[in-house]
Length: 144
Image 1 (cartoon, rainbow, N blue to C red):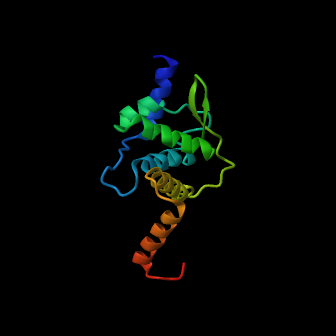
Image 2 (cartoon, rainbow, N blue to C red):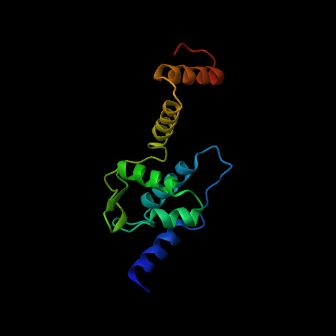
Image 3 (cartoon, helix red, strand yellow):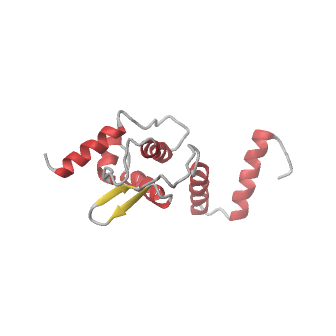
């Protein structure tokens, strides 16, 4: 068995039986992001361990290549992983990262929402008004 095949097997084993829940209100990319962060912070993925390629993970989970690419970019930005050009994606040493299970999730959802809204032609003020309206529906008017 080649070293690449062994790396792939170890990384796949760490994912376990994880599957995305397409019925969940949590976006697929956030589900995958949270799973990988759990695997890293729990020690199932070790520092410098090679992660599955974007293509391999997208096939294994049955999701779009771009979804996994977005997850990896987000995790790299947050310091959980790093990429070596031509070698793959690897787990960072996360001992210095202070992490809670909700770290970055709300910011990631907000960034995704704002990007989509701007892409649909909304103005920043309209986005803010929309968020205020939704908060008022949930909590009642509170003078935002």
